Image (cartoon, rainbow, N blue to C red; front, side):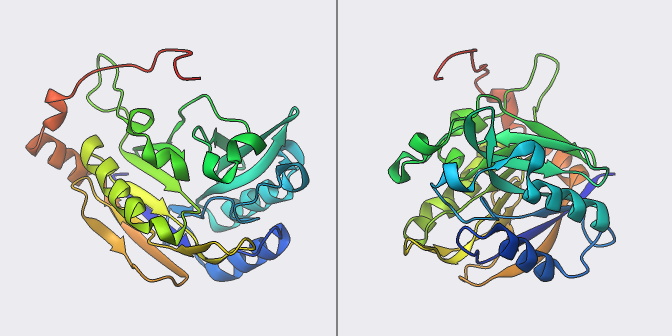
Amino acid sequence: MSELRTTLVQSDLRWEDPAANCRMLEETLGDLNAEETDLIVLPEMFSTSFTMNSREMAEPMAESPTVAWLQDQASRRGCVITGSISIAEEGDYFNRLVWARPDGSLVHYDKRHLFRMAGEHERYSMGHERVIVELNGFRILLSVCYDLRFPVWLRQQPGPEEHFEYDALLCVANWPAPRRHPWRVLLQARAIENLCPVIGVNRVGEDARGMTYAGDSMLVDAKGEALIDEPRDLPFVRTGALSLDELQAFREKFPAWRDADHFRLADGVGF
């Protein structure tokens, strides 16, 4: 298949109440299923909001009710669903993006860049691996919020026989309203420099700390132009389609990748 139907779920979140958030999101999604979408994207820490109470709120990966909920939603709706969760594993805590498939299988990415201005680096452990998943022929690089500010981590790193490493970048966030301009610009910049669409899902509302969120969830094409863009601080569910054929045609018509600086992230560098 050469089309990827992607559903952006921009929502307000209840503070540190996983059960309530899962109920709310299930109601928000309604009857949405594989006849209408291939991928449902929820915000960062969709079950708790952006909590630094990792010791109290993190769920063990193998026994997580929220992970089980994701698996159930993927199975019943017949499509992939993803979002990040506070996870405890082997004595560490992670801000973990979980990719749940309809067959019950899971892939996860642990947030690499931890937002020190909120003390996230003191409450969570950083991830060490870039993760690429595949859906409908699209190779998708996973990322979480603050990762978006670091272009080297997200830059295309194709192998010697490849032109591109991935075909879309996905970023889930709890990105505050006072910094909404960088969020919007960085989504478009990552698309332009990597010649790939970008899927960005942020939350709205106000959390228990008084931090406000403006949303600005976007689906951006490889030219940096918005396919979905509703700059209103209101919840919404919107689905847009990405075409692999159109992406490949654009890359051939505008082959900036031929002049890119080739590099590889060396093991251990920056960790």
